[in-house]
Amino acid sequence: MRVLGLESSCDETAAAIVDGGTRVIADVVASQHEVHERYGGVVPELASRAHIRNVVPVVQACLDRAGCTLDAIDGIAVTNAPGLIGALLVGLQTAKALAWVTGKPLVGVHHLEGHLSAVFLEPDPPPMPHLALIVSGGHTSLVRVNDHGRVIELGATRDDAAGEAFDKGAKLLGLGYPGGIVIDKLAQTGDPTAVSFPKAMTASSTGAEFSFSGLKTALLHHVRAHGVPEGQALSDLCASYQAAIVEVLVRKTRRIARKENLTHVQVCGGVAANSELRKQLRAAAAEDELTLYIPAPARCTDNAAMIAAAGYHRLVRGERDSLALDATPNAPLPRSA
Ligand code: KG4
Ligand code: ZN
Image (cartoon, rainbow, N blue to C red; front, side, top):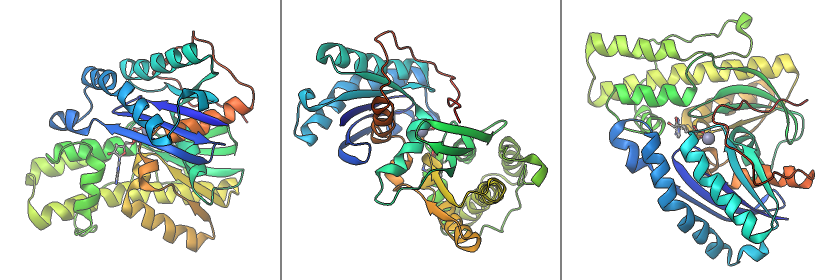
């Protein structure tokens, strides 16, 4: 079954065609980073307008790359939650129009269900059940994945997401947007022990919950006291800030894997592209005898192949959405054991 996926929940306009939920036939992502860079974050109205400009060319480029027409598609999957409302609506209305003119079945996909499905596009996907650490710009959570579409959230962030901590930290340091990539790069030549930052919610009593807003405040105080450094000192500050985020994520993941008795762990979402997080998780997995699964960096950040993969499982289960399907900007990950 060939599924056309569409994704437009934030600042990437993406279309992909995936066969059988695992084989990527075409995958096109148009990023809007240059649109938002000067503002240090995503400007919702500008995102919606860029999606409108990009969505039809992106779908066309995807079909061209696949060398097929819409006739060869068996179903259409689209991100309809959560995200920026105006941005979501562009992909959703496009998907509905395509479903209407072709008569093909339509399914809405929760963005995080999409992130959880990205790893199934890799050659060696995790078995069920497994533990998932979802780390994106808007979400940070630990989730028990019993099967496709059957997940239980064990804990999430109480305030900022890990990606948000990277983005807000980078903005504070005048490093542009998206911050994660810039901090990741600068940190590679920095000393992670140079500055001590708080590692919140690491006591075992805090379960699977996270908190990153105190870290951002600690960086603000540091910058107020010492200014924004340059050269090696900037790399040291980035490495220290990144180390605090990574340490919390790794410690929590190890602890919850042990507690839930899950030995297979996947990590997904934009922050899973972070080189230090990948390195430290690999080392922790080796120590704790966990098997770790992380998608290729381009499949960690937003893309439509993951939406098509998640949509495939919904379609196979016989799920269909009508053309009345709406966008829900704040919908939590559907809980189902
Ligand atoms: O999953 P994603 O593409 O979009 C959302 O669903 O939010 O994640 C975007 C987030 C941004 O906060 C971005 O700074 C972060 O992922 N990110 C990274 C890296 N690449 C992207 N954070 C740390 N290191 C990276 N290499
Ligand atoms: Zn995402």
